Length: 279
Image (cartoon, rainbow, N blue to C red; front, side, top):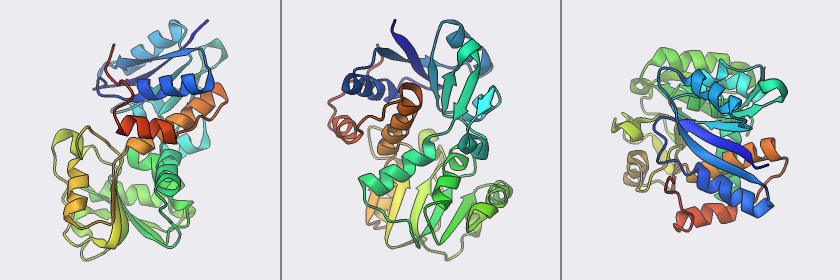
């Protein structure tokens, strides 16, 4: 019997996850299907219950439900516990739910393995203090960065997030308007500003010479944040498509016990060779 998986979010029609997991399934000869679910903003838990009742085996969770998913779990991984946000749900025996967060691994693998970025001794700015930022915080601190600054429109949220992670590495939090003349080797956007046409208020000159810019989000066209990075003269400007594929590969490993090859899938997506149109 074909095993059923899906990604749930709102909006969701743009998601490339079905094409990615279909490619993984072909590559590893797995009997599975993977769909999109448009989640109800006012009753996310009902959508999850319906999916489980229909025999679903696993869900990827995207905006705006990652923090809500964390509250539905019967069992949770340490990295999801740290993040207090979940992007991968697995259905266990008896319909119990296990939650994990593969975003951080996806980000690190994309930057380090696919693009050759070295984190050791670098200064990093993480913009945002929500579920997306929490999901990558601990993995970033484990890379050997010299300093990690979390900046957010609401300074209190950034400070609180930094305080929660201070035992894990060199991290501090502040408001976007408190960055001053600091410069960073890598600036990561973990906000959804680019999806809602809200401009990020980063000071000019905060990117160090030959610094990198990384947007955890992606689109068919360069995101506003990536365009900002280009205007700042960044050495490398990267969107989140590779991160999406890498975190999906980790979810696939959790569900199927196999790690697929990601490079050909990333290339196929970049070149428009995988259909991402909803059925």
